[in-house]
Image (cartoon, rainbow, N blue to C red; front, side, top):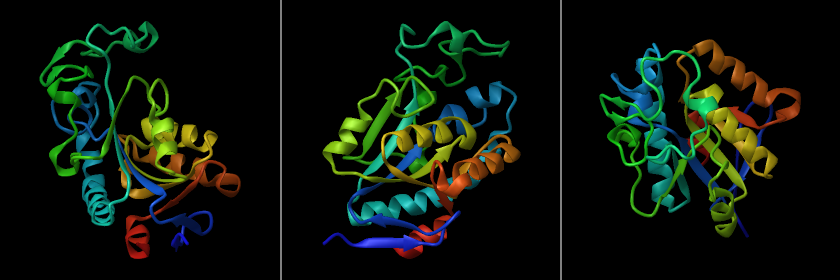
Length: 222
């Protein structure tokens, strides 16, 4: 019989099964988290994201100790930009666009230094790494099929930024039948008020998208 863990969460208790719950780390990439990357080129204070690093690292250690499934995502496009629509690349007037040469190589292009996940939460051998061309982790990827093959039914989500790639991925997961919890201190935004709004939205109306709780509750349970 599969062991079940229960934790206090918003809006009510969240229960998840051992071995069938994947930890997801969204887009903890150099281009978003480090100074001089794409995020900074858009005028953002990247240090606001750093608070999520230690909680994510602690969760990774717990999942690795138990041999449970871990998923890392990276927003990344093909070098020829064939998977980057003009509506995404040409929007606004940024100093750098996707595909342009930046301080960490070509911006958000697979294989470039800026796309790599920061060392503090880097993937280890055997963990799933998904390069996604969109904001959501299921769009134009085979992640759903990979998770199904492993019997995954629940997702614990972390990463950046809360209201963009994390929330999009969580909504996509909800539509595919996964029961999802977002770790409050394991996610951050360049705009703290956006993070707060995203947390409120996902848990509204009886966990319409999912639950959220602090990392200490997850770690205490497992």
